[in-house]
Image (cartoon, rainbow, N blue to C red):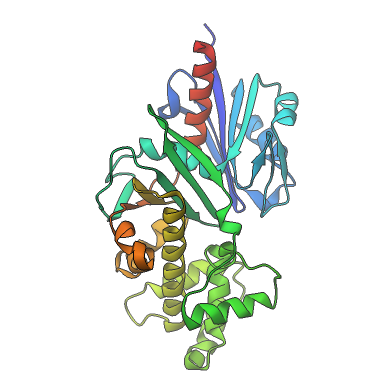
Length: 340
């Protein structure tokens, strides 16, 4: 009997990770995996051809999580300009099936499979009811959001583009940041502030503040030539020995913004079962998330603060959650189809 192999993918604005799994063994049996820099390729098909050429493993179907809205099997990748189409993937790579799903749906799909302690760190244990709704907020190159609802037998994930909804500032600093961003964009979304580029936008605001003028020359010298200053900003913000105060202020504001928007999503879907922080940024700033600033912003919802305080909040530590979720989604759907 010929083994059936699944091509799974996690396509983001910064990187694209592809892997191949045996259908009958699930995501625990990985045959190959390679990560590519997304911006170096004109489209996903170019990456897929290169990947399959390198690994020399035959695949029968694909399940790809992508950073963009998926409508009728087609997605426009927000931060890349790519168009990914299920039908085109099936035809070009001669697949029996090809699934394109939102990357946060993929991450959410894997949430019930996460192992406490190993895959997640809990910021708030909370007091969740049985089978309460779950939510995921994932800041990275963009800001992804999704939620899961219990259908009586299992959790079902649903996509959201809440990251593109209007940014709602709290306090003078955030109002000033909003005013600055409005000079460049007619619409300022949460993603403009709560993402990797958002950290850069917040930093730009503080960098102009006269209070931090004494650090300006040093920072400009150290960031000169850096294609992306965000890792530098985050690293300097969390350095205990003489931290960069401009960077520290930037990270603190980012943490507050992330907490506020996570709380917003928790209220909108009533995520009593738990809030999960995914994406590439939260694990890297875990010390900043643990100091209480995030949770204070998360629960600061006036008359509903007591509801938010009971919601568990977890940071997803497994960097392959979206990839594994895409693989599990494809495997489960195929199994369901075969058994129906």
